[in-house]
Length: 603
Image (cartoon, rainbow, N blue to C red; front, side, top):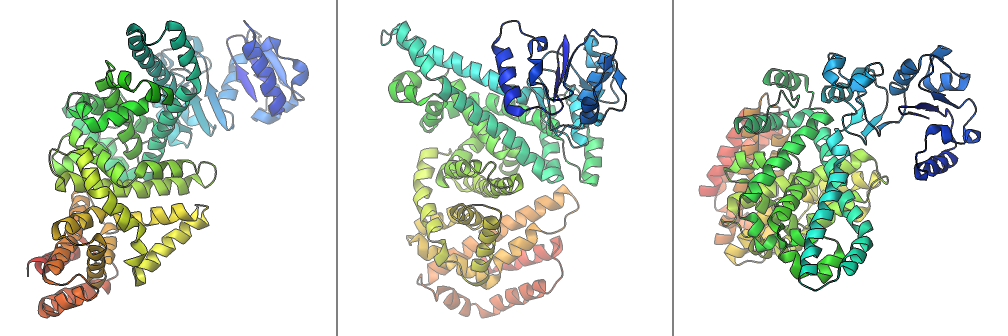
């Protein structure tokens, strides 16, 4: 519809998209071209190309209607301000200049005197999306203000990250092939030919990484104020470690965070982009300083960084790459933060007291045990096929499983965690449980699973994927079941039958659902509820072990075990019956139920 540079203002109020694109592409390929070279015969009725040096611009009726301008004449600077605040789908910055500030900022603070006459406030933007192909198209405060009025935008660092990523790949590939050439295994001409042949694949690797990075922002943004407590803890931890100055990064202070929590307003997308950047910077430093990059299990991360021709033809050169540790740390950092968000590692550290490298290992174990990379790829391919909210909900379901399982492996795994060993110990059993889940679920459990599948399918999700994702909340218990099977020498299917039978008998899934939905007034109560949910899973596992220790692993095992503990069981059943009769479950009720169930595990 419109564009401007330092010479011209281009206006095409009703363009022919194909013809306009072809003409702009012609100008792009023409050396030293300008908008003055545009074929005016291709402009839509009322289209104009005017000089910025003009004192005044007479606007056509079509241009005035397109951009909602009442005046018939405008100075070029005012016209450009109107274009910046026009109601359009996309406002794209591709050149030099800072054009958006916050309403409370002065032009001097924006630091771009040449564009003082054009600059607008973030709150006045009406574009749906802002993209920054250039740097500093907006001040950070301007971005935040625009986001608060509903504009969708990242930061310039996020929007420009593919260029940096591409340069990194190019440098690392040149280092690798330089070593190969130096050893006499390839000529310079062969190297150049090979590099040129990998252009498209490098682009695909870069785009995939940047897709996941922006997806991480979308997932965090979708959770809004629910993540504020965790984000506040992360910010404070970074400040305490001297790794962040929130005033410089325009992140909210504690008083403003408290106000947002009270108002249920989360961080804006530009603020989340800053957190994402710091999460990656700090995790990379922590992983590089650890022994994680030397773990043989991380060799797959190193290989995956390079295009397939190098993976297949230069495996030895990849393994001896002089920046192998740095590449592995980068790959592990991006893979983790892009998938589970900026606060995940800090949350796990706070929950378990373990180090970032431990969290990264537990994440790798969880990812491979549950085959999450394959599942995420299938979900990602639903772009433009299902509503974005549906796609986001599917990803959130995988994240809940990831969070529970990473915490489980951190607490229950054999330390120091060995990724290959843990994956080998759990992968087959988890897969068997997943494929046989229908045999273990009956009644309300089966109906609940079917309802989740039906809801996803109704939103356009393929049935196979809907079934896979709907099962994830149940599969959170899978590592426990595999461990019990290993320790008891029983088949994992027999263990599952007892485990789910106990869950039905004592309403443990119902109780966990009510706990997850319990009203909490602060983060302490939220953590207390989370601890009770963890306890309920632990009680179910402990009860399963007790039943298996004393009974034959068959369909009657649970009933036989309960029959010998009738008085104790009746007290628990009476309490749970009373809870079901309540309109809501609060923290006190959960604490009492938790204590009664704990008694069953030792009684």
